[in-house]
Amino acid sequence: MANEQEVLAAAKKAIMDYDVDKAEEIAKKGLAGGVDPVAMVEKGFIPGIVEIGDLFDAGEVYLPELILAADAMKAGTAICEAKFPKGALKEKKKVIMGTVEGDIHDIGKSIVVSFLAANGFEVTDLGRDVAPKAFAEKAKELGADVVGASALLTTTMEMQKKVVEEMKAAGLAGKVKIIVGGAPTSDEWAKKIGADAYGENATEAVAKIKKLTGLV
Ligand code: B12
Image (cartoon, rainbow, N blue to C red; front, side, top):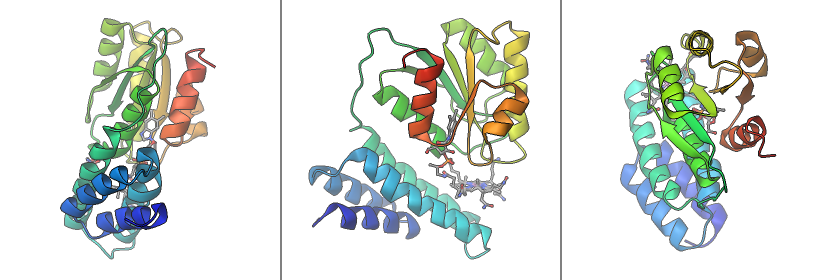
């Protein structure tokens, strides 16, 4: 690969061509050529899936294509994530992350998990379609510092509110911080449901969680 811009453009194109093999090949070649793995995800693969989302919105591509693009996205990012820098904190803060019940979108949540791990946090990933009670139970069991809930559908945002309610019911609100994220959510939404913070993307998620845990 000649230069970083070409690699990033090729990464985006692989997602838009629904090409799993190509996404993997570009990730491997890019890394071998010295392209930063974080840049490859943020400036290559993510713009690809976002553009497919816009085409889906406009009725120009359909669900099968969306699924294929998501597969390519996962394949490419998995290779990059393995090369994310490994952070080291003296005292590991514990974070529980999951996508809320009724929602199977987990690409963004998984990127946040990888960024947190790369920054030295001890992250427990509950996966997707996670019941509100499961967040609270795991937080209690593991003595978590922060719980993060992701929602990508306007219909499942309400589940983030239920996560906050379950945390309160378990006597954890205030002690364990709650952060929410996902495309339809916002700062206002976080405030409205009583969450402690909102993160717009993986970089902001790390910065906000560092703040919530007193690391900065
Ligand atoms: C890929 C995708 C899928 C894939 C998901 C695969 C997977 N394993 O995740 C598949 C094909 C399965 C899918 C299914 C559906 N999808 Co879909 N999907 C998308 C798409 C194109 C991209 C989402 C994505 O991965 N983005 C890239 C990642 C990196 O971004 P992100 O998720 O926003 O995450 C970043 C930030 O939000 C933040 N973040 C995320 N989580 C968290 C958590 C915390 C705590 C913090 C701090 C930050 C944070 O950091 C992340 C990294 O920077 C979006 C369109 C879009 N532009 O968002 C539609 C979209 C979300 N889907 C949509 C729909 C309607 C559906 C379906 C209902 C379609 C259907 N008719 O069946 C189903 C839902 C099934 C369900 N029950 O969940 C709609 C939602 C509309 C709405 N407002 O509710 C969208 C917006 C498309 C559209 N324009 O209509 N989808």
